[in-house]
Image (cartoon, rainbow, N blue to C red; front, side, top):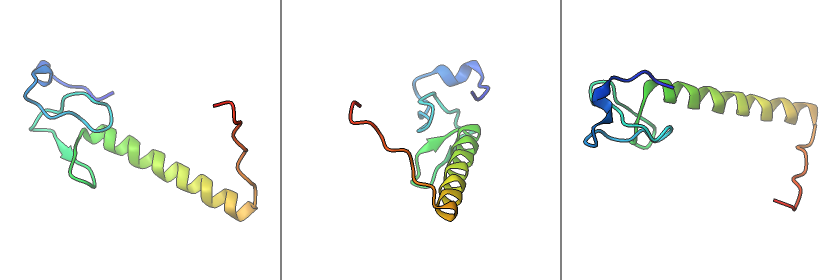
Length: 73
């Protein structure tokens, strides 16, 4: 979780699109669609996407099917 000062708990700050916590304006970043995001949250999001994409590519190469989801969900 990103380290933030007490100033971030004011309601005037934008909300991070990943963790739903306030983002201080001096440290705010924006994601691909222009939503505010913490830099730390963006890094986690990108690395998770890369790991998932890599997993998909490995499965495709090895022709291993994804486990079937149960219909009990």
